[in-house]
Image 1 (cartoon, rainbow, N blue to C red):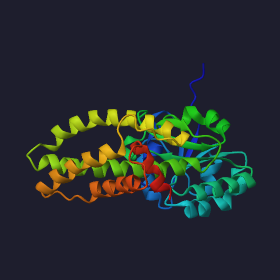
Image 2 (tube, rainbow, N blue to C red):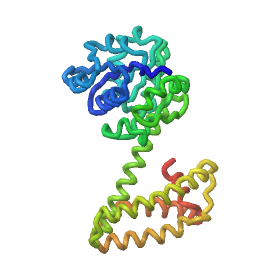
Image 3 (cartoon, one colour):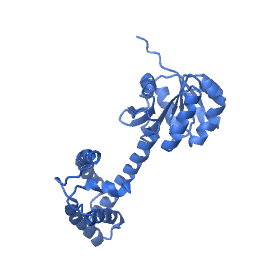
Image 4 (spheres, rainbow, N blue to C red):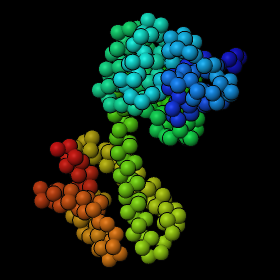
Amino acid sequence: MSTKRTPVTVIGLGQMGAALAGAFLDAGHPTTVHNRTPEKAAPLVERGAVLAATVAEAVAASDLVVVCVLDYPAVRTLLDPVAAELRGRTVVNLTSGSPEQAREEAAWAAGHGIGYLDGGIMTTPPGVGDSANMILYAGAPELLAEHRPALAVLGDPVDLGADPGLASLYDAGLLGLMWSVFGGWLHATALAGADGVPAKEFTAVAVRWLRTVSWFMTTYADQIDAGEYPGDDATIDVQVATIAHLLHAGEARGVDGRLPRLHLELMKEAVAAGHGGDSYARIIEAFRK
């Protein structure tokens, strides 16, 4: 059986782009790189990468072209002049942007006969190459299937389906979830720390608690899809009373209470609207407004 690796081109060698190219090199893929400032390519060239002097030279080197630059206008500026050279090749755009920009880029690619996948990298540069981390992909499923062996060296490829905007949409939503979790964890750690509990000790328990929270999320997702919010685990009325204990503990310790007060405000709005007996999942209706 052949062990020959697919040639890959990486355009854009910021911290993330360099990490992507490095992961391809580590996995034995012939890797061509291009960057506006060629000096950034030096460490990769030392590891075996080929530096392309122009974008046209870079895309001609591989059927799989991975782009990771500042924004979508930068992607278009780079690729529009070489659209003819890209015909029949696959562009994997791992640049951060909006779902609307991703769909527009996919339409541009289709108009030029270019295969297109849009992606979201769900890790920081040091995590690239670790299969425990996800790389989200959206676009033609057959393209992801074709290039999965190569893309899998970057992280676990998660196929979100044919809509090219979904990777950016998921990326935005998951980042929002991350910041909310960080905020809740930092508030809780400050609360426990006020009584002398080290952050590491508290966090060990908090991480275990998040496994239970994930169970609630899975249960609530079914309720959200059904549009029904039975309060058979814990009602909003009960959680209004519970969060009062959190606020009291924080106030007694001088811990900023803006974050839990936001949750309390949302819950009180639901109660006032007659939904106190529903589950916490009902709060999604406040965000939908």
